[in-house]
Structures are given as C-alpha cells and as structure tokens.
Length: 250
Image (cartoon, rainbow, N blue to C red; front, side):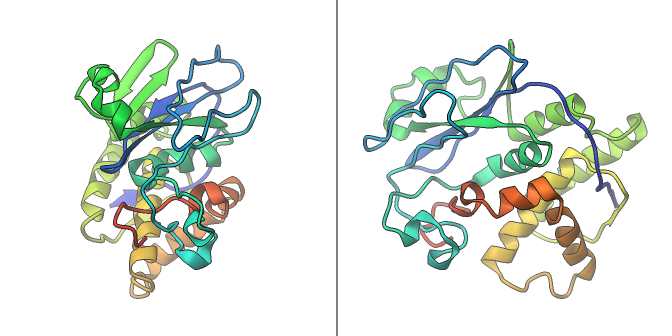
C-alpha cells in the first residue's frame, strides 16, 4: 500500500465544523484573509464568551472535566483545575492539515443544551456534525471535508491515478482506528497523511510504545511530525489540551 508524504502548497479559503461527545458539540470554522469574513456564532460555556475581534484561534470549553491528551503532566487544562476542552476527535486531522499548510482558523463550541433545541441539528444534512463551510459551499462528513481540502490545496496527488490511491489509503485509515497496517510512502504529502498521523499519535498516547515493533510506522510519525508548522502545532496547547476521547482519562 502506498502512502504519500512530502510537501505541497495551499492557497484557498475554507470553513468547517465538527461534533464531539455526549456533553458538548465542538464546531470549527476556518477563515483565510482573501475570503469574506464568516459569521461565527458562539454558544458561551460557563461564562466563556467569544474571542475579541482580531484575536487568534479561540476555543470555548466543554463543562465535561477530563485531562488533556497528555494527562496531568502534559500541560492540559486538567492539570490546572480549569475547565478542559472537549475531545479532539475527528477534527484533529483537519487541524493538522490546516496548521501544516499555514492556514489560520477559528473555532466554535455548541453546548449540548443548544444542540438539543434542534435548530443547529436541523441545519445539518445528516443530523450530525462535522459541518464544513467554504463560501457558499456546505459539506458534511469528516472524510468529505478532507477530500475537499485535498483537492483545494494540492494534497490529492498529481494525477487521477494517485488520487485513487490516496482515496484508498484514506479509506483504509478508518480500519487503522481498529488495527495497524504496514505501508510505504513517497516524497509528497496528501490529506490522508494527516488522517493517518492523527490515528497513530492517538495510539501512542493510549498505548505508549505500541509502535516499537513497527519501525516503518515510527519513521513515518517522526518524519511527518518534524514538519516545522506541524511540529509547532503538535507542541501547542491547542493540540495537547484536547483529550482524545470523553472517558475522562486521555
């Protein structure tokens, strides 16, 4: 199985949203300078309000207490006694893509109380998030979002043959959430890389040392994680403070 990994440029604007756990619905919206500003509606949680104009990425927090993905020693909000954010979930692969490609974004949280009122849910095609906004284009389903970003930002291979292989790999990543596979990668990157890296990093947190018997996967994680912008994102509180799941442990 071939998995591309390397460099690519990007230029277009986008927006998206993603849902998380039984106590909160996390939605993300991304914005680039040449795209008309989106209208972002924030549902405050425990008095936390929307970001000030011009502020960097802002994430409101869920009332569900749990440590960050690195636990109490990893700088997560669970270590400080502050209310932690909801789990990163399926949005993290897109966060990685945006961070690595140098694309700024804004984030929005919808509380479960607001969600249960039905207005937000009624606007979702399948009655669930993620929701992706790119100008007048609205998409649902996390992999559809990644594919759109791949096409928009040159992360879908150089021809239809490579695009088909990338689709195969990305679909296979869904299986990797349950088991590992061996793979070979080339010298360019695709949106599937971010999806796979998210899975492997989560496994390293949940089962430290689990990749020790898979040197190819270890090298893959090391190589991708060393990309300067992605490395900065992975070391940031925005990544480290988000739990992997809602069980209150990771």
